[in-house]
Amino acid sequence: MRATAAWTLAGVTLCLMLPLLAPAVLLLSVAAPLAWRLMTGARLALRRPSAPLVALTLAAVYLCLNATWSLSPATARGSLLMLFSIVAAVHFTLQALDDGDAEAGRAMAIGLYAAMATVGAVICIEALSGQWLRRQLMALAPVLRPDLRHLEVKEGVTFMHPYLLNRNIAMLTLLLWPTLLCAISLASRSRQRQWLLAGLAPACAAILAAHHATSKIALVGSAAAFGALLLAPTVAKRAIAGAWIAAIALVVPLATAAFQNDLHLASWMPRTAQHRIVIWGHTSQLIAKAPVLGAGIHTARALHDPNDYDAPRAPGSEFQLTTGLHSHNGYLQTWYEAGAVGAALLLAFGLLVLRSLATAPPGAQPYLYASFVACALMGGSSFSLWQPWFMAALGLAAVFAGLGWNIFAAQRGDCAGADRAT
Image 1 (cartoon, rainbow, N blue to C red):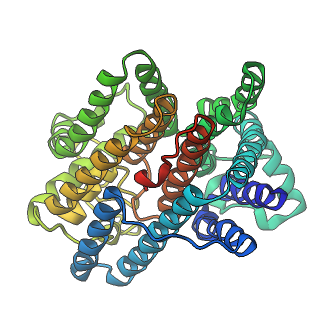
Image 2 (image 1 turned 30 degrees about the horizontal axis):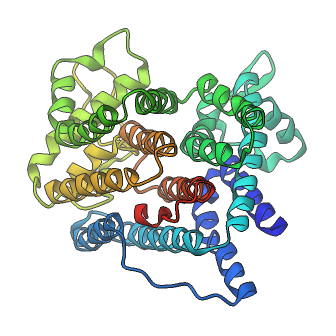
């Protein structure tokens, strides 16, 4: 049990401090369940795949065909290999958690909480101090110094741009609600629960203090969903499902309308938001070239040439009319690269996940739905869908949400585990 807790603590710490290592950590997450099997001699029972897993597998199979006409087929194949690996790791780990020892699950939850509380405090200090800790470490280990374009010198003092913490903050946001569910499941008394929840306050403060606006939106939106689930669960569930449908069905006309109405010129909007409206508007115009099957995954990134300084600019602005290095909207990226077929598969997958969450114990549902909302909002205005670390971060959120579901259900004598939401 100590080894399991330490293994989870180390893995989550690595993900939070160095998010690019998330794919390796997720793939290694199967090690603990395998160790349990070897020590107990138990076999992993094969089960019928859950409906969300079937939908996700069908989407991955379709994307294999879609990748054949991508402008970057080699990169597309690499992303698909990563996607299949992540789906397999998440499915195996969740099934092992469902069949595994309750004490082993609690050990994992302890490791998760310890990492989130400790590293959340460190990231909070970094966000509030202009990354003071990293600047001190840079003096001792120059290898930690980022590229010069991410640095700024003022009055002889070197500062790092705050967006260097964006990945850390995003990872913190995605794992917050699963950790909260684990925390309340670990607590046996109300005072103990209060102390455990207080330990995660620095993580929340880090998200709100950081530069990454999408994480703030995800935190506030998921907190609103959490509150709605507590007050009016039936209405809240329908609203979340409706918002998921609207996000996929309306993203193209909304992106087009925002760009055509010159919202990118609005002075009250942050510069990054103005730039994203240009990217979204330009991308939405390209969808008509392949509306059903899409342009092929990774095409948006392949079209962007960072050295093309002569690219046309959006009317009245300095922003180039390109698809950008990052699409910054997973729903729009799905429409462009995977077409209407891909959008329909994404829609079905999300609705099936929501249906699965409705089978969880009522007390756990607010945390699980909040986790879904946080992931959905993060995908709506953040990184490219195909970044390996981002795919793995979503997979880790699913694993730890399933872990919290299992512990919560076991405490209340509910033998139904998280396998249905795989």
